[in-house]
Image 1 (tube, rainbow, N blue to C red):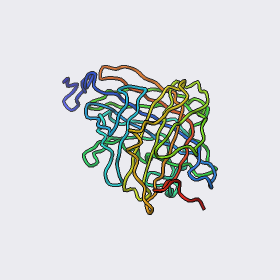
Image 2 (image 1 turned 60 degrees about the vertical axis):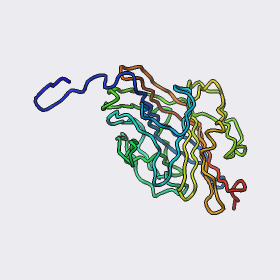
Image 3 (image 1 turned 135 degrees about the vertical axis):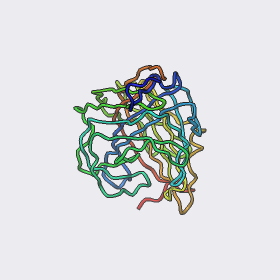
Image 4 (image 1 turned 120 degrees about the vertical axis):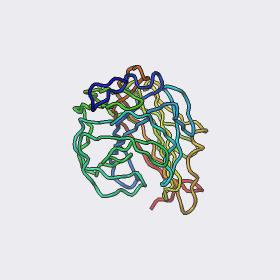
Length: 296
């Protein structure tokens, strides 16, 4: 290790040769939380710095296109051991009012979400997720608010560099046009999920399934990256087996999204990275032990 002065230390570059894959996405999706409510926009960040300690509950594919799935609860985080990339910064989207949806379908009070958003690694019950204060994993734009990703948005994504992943910045990333669904949401069940989309010029589409018991006692996330030209993604039975089982008093909410992404990637000495932003659609459904929840 080289010392540049008596009080500072230069990190070695590369920190860990050929071990890590840095993945950071920012997405906006338009859709319905409930069939009886107006359509809204949600936003989310997805960060996975995959290294030798990555332990998903299920994984299909070692590199994109791939799927990975995690189970967790309101008290036990996903078994995701992130590689240290320093601070991750998303900058360039519009300031917005957002409501936290992370712990269930009932939104929290609106809060301002300024740009940039900084994400830092934390130690939570032995795992090392990234926390993006003040942004939570899923947030809703209140009805009537201005979208934070538009045709004119140009986002910068930076990783400042840490113990495992070196520093890099991708600037001026523009989102593709929003991905449009090409399937009937009524066909989605906990046992069968196929998401298809209209033709897109985007090279990559991110498909995500989030399942959560309303109590928060059990949750699952299935995250897939598929080529846009394929036109659809069927979630495998092995992945769907991880969704929580609902009861009469603890129904299962399933949120399904598809977003078209502009991705930037490069191979580095410590491995490679893939970052980007995108827009698309989502829908949320409720299921009890005997099928869809009754509607009022």
